[in-house]
Image 1 (tube, protein in one colour):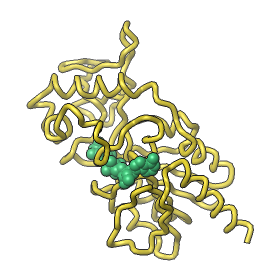
Image 2 (cartoon, protein in one colour):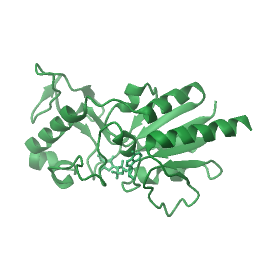
Image 3 (cartoon, protein in one colour):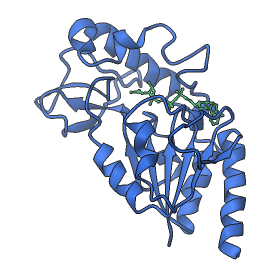
Length: 236
Ligand code: OAD
C-alpha cells in the first residue's frame, strides 16, 4: 500500500461546527486573547482564566461530529497506509475511525501532568457530564493542566511527524493557513518527487512550495475531488 499522509488544520473541522482560528469572526479565541490563554507561562499568570477557557471550549464543541472529509480520510485506510498529522485539538479524526492520528498541538479532552508531560489522562467526567480541569487539580498523584501545546512551548510530536512525512508517497494538506510553525514547515520533509495536494477554499500562498497542487474547495468538497484524482492515478 502507498503511504498517504494528511496534514490537517482547523479548516477540516469547520464544517463540523468548530470555527477556524484566524478567519472566523466567532473564533475560538472570541473572549480571550491568545496571549492570555495560549502562550507559554499563561497558567502561572492566569490559571483560572486558562482553565475556564478550555473548560468552555470542551463544553461548546465536544458534541461536534466528524464531517465527510474526516470520514473519507478514515475510509482511505482500505486502500492506503494512511497517517493523519493534525494541528487540531478536537478528536474528530478518531471519531471518524482514523487509526493513526498524531496531534501536534495537544488534545482538548485530555490533560497532562505538569511535572511529567508524558503522563497524559482523559479528563474525567464530573456529575454534570462536563470535563473540567482547574488550578491544583490532581489525578493519580499528578498535578494536571490542559493537554494543549501553548505558543512558545515545544511540540513533542514534531519529530514523529517529520519521520512520517519523509517516506510519504503522497501528502495532502487540508484546511490550514500555514501560519504556525513548526507545523507549517512540515511539507518540507516530503520527498521532492512526491505530490503534495492542498485543499482549502482560501488557500495560503506558500512561497517555499510553489509546486503544491491546490484544490480550492472546502474540506468536504475537496476530499471528493482528491479521491477522484487518486482513483484516476491508480487506474492509469
Ligand atoms: P487557521 O484558522 O489559521 O486557518 C484555517 C484554514 O482553514 C484557512 O486557510 C481557511 O481558509 C481554511 N478553511 C476555512 N474553512 C474551511 C473549510 N470548510 N474547509 C477547508 N478549509 C477551510 O487554522 P490552522 O492553520 O489550523 O494552535 O491554525 C494553526 C494553529 O493556530 C492551530 O492549531 C492553533 C492556532 O493558534 C494552537 O492551538 C497551538
